[in-house]
Image (tube, rainbow, N blue to C red):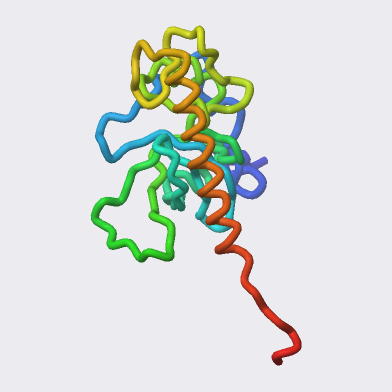
Length: 184
């Protein structure tokens, strides 16, 4: 009898014996450059486009590169609420009506959150609800300020909430086109 070298649908290469051991400690890639930023996926548009809110509280459009698609997608699942590392496109000319674009550089897993919390200047808004930092935490900071009074913290939180509400209002205004069927 002939030995089966390929397997059904050529899936011999995906056999359990070819899996790497899972106990390998994965190093977390942190932002190294000013053009790299942490972000949270807020909406998946389809294809290779998602909407993210970046650490500077700006909504941007994320392009998923080929490295994270297809067969390589297995360890890089992107869902709503996933924390990712994105690269800003400083070379791109922006149109006032369109959102700025960013490229996907890294997808973080749930077990990477402890390392991400240690990054200075990380906004609490982009963390998942289960991983929100408490104000008593030594790593909790809003906008890179240290030793903030309670009154200043309240003012900063109010400002952040206003910015978020304004961006949501602007988004709603842009998404609601007026169309009258009687004009046709």
